[in-house]
Length: 168
Image (cartoon, rainbow, N blue to C red; front, side, top):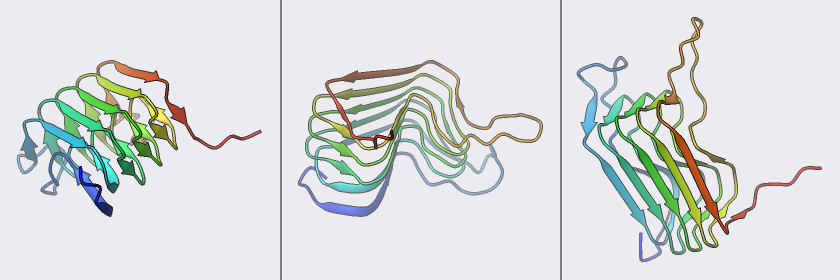
């Protein structure tokens, strides 16, 4: 969206949409790696990995720069029974604006085998929180977690404006 189009109802998924079925079945779709570069325009969400019973076997790279605007959240890993075999890397810089949170991991049963790296630079604006990992881990009655980062989480912030609400 480098020309600045308003795709505000669009969800960008770097990996693929899953095939359905059980967790980790042969029906799961696989992608070797993903790379998303956004330099302008507006979208609703970004999922760097896959969504719904799918796997990214390698690394995920997301760069959001220029006048880009994300109306909701950026999930580097993916979501809803997604797996990443490598590292996730997200860089937000220039005057990019994220209304929601930025997550190095994913959401709802997203497992990251490697490290997560979140870097926020310049005059980028984040309206929510910044997480090195993910959110909404599913924990079963036998205390098994189906979400997580199995490597390290790394967050680098340099001269950024965090615009989260202030509470007294």
